[in-house]
Length: 196
Image 1 (spheres, one colour):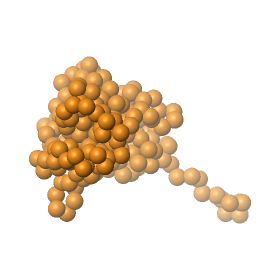
Image 2 (cartoon, one colour; image 1 turned 30 degrees about the vertical axis):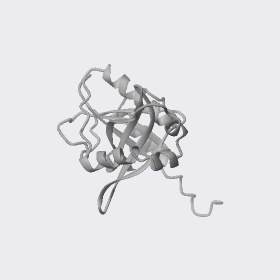
Image 3 (cartoon, rainbow, N blue to C red; image 1 turned 90 degrees about the horizontal axis):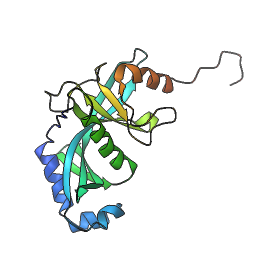
Image 4 (cartoon, rainbow, N blue to C red; image 1 turned 90 degrees about the vertical axis):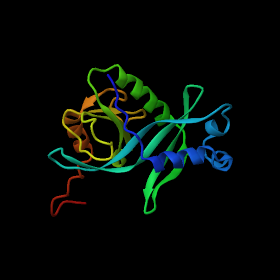
């Protein structure tokens, strides 16, 4: 499947490249794999990071753009990621990081390239479940910053996924949102007169 990766805002790209070119920023990063890498580092595959703020009982959801994430590569291998965030002054570098979501993102993108259809890849965070997914959005004519989850979009949970949700298994939004809604349902309120 062709992936239509949206271009990151130029200030976000510049912020990451500036941080990547700064020996101080790289040396002080809490990412040993980034500090210990020998060879040129490149920032690639910018993905907009959206946050799923709430899921309603009807299964509809609201998302908001939280930043842009870039995979940092050395010798064709992702060794870390860089994230930017929107500030009152525009896009700014936030931090470097490493860990399982870096390799899981790379794996999910390779997996998505073999699937039928055309999508725009994004990342979707569900903070209440400590869950990150690759969001394959069907409308790739947008710039990646806007849009709502469509029932036919695909979500690929990244490893580590929450218990009971298979990592790297694509789900239609219409299938996965009810599961997430059930997971996020508030605890039952005790009846009057019953022990709390």
